Amino acid sequence: MAENDLTRFSIAVPENLLNQFDKLNERTRGDRNRSEAVRDLIRQALVADELRTPEEEVIGSLTMIYDHHTGDLTRRLDDIQHDYTAEIVSTMHVHLDHHNCLEILALKGVGARVYELADKLLALRGVHHGALTCAATGTSLEL
Picture 1 (cartoon, rainbow, N blue to C red):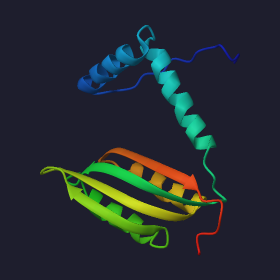
Picture 2 (cartoon, rainbow, N blue to C red):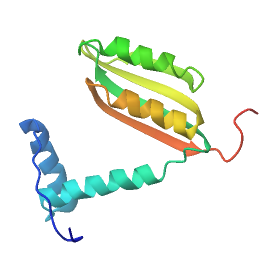
Picture 3 (tube, rainbow, N blue to C red):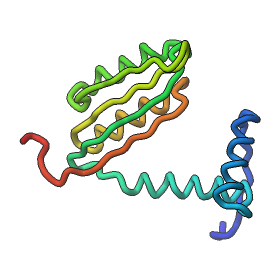
Picture 4 (cartoon, one colour):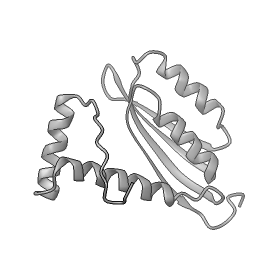
């Protein structure tokens, strides 16, 4: 397949989410069509993945918003976090409303472990939004 060949695929998106996406796209990019906007998001995710430093010591924060009523999400979040106690420095849990919670984890450790933890937590069904902000320290964290 040549670089300019396009592959069509379909995705299912709640109508209100798609409407919000279209409004954002129109406001920020004006004449960019939906396909180009999705391609931009894919490129952005690939660049972010390339910037990971798996061998470096990193510090960071993981922020998640999730519906704690989704299945056994709370138990699964706890189970995963218990496997990464060396990387989790601190957590903060905030009840946003009857269903939604905000959880912030302060993290430090070898990048590969920190990224692995974030990937596992953010992939869980019921986690509506999440973001890992990380930076390599350039020095050993055992000061």
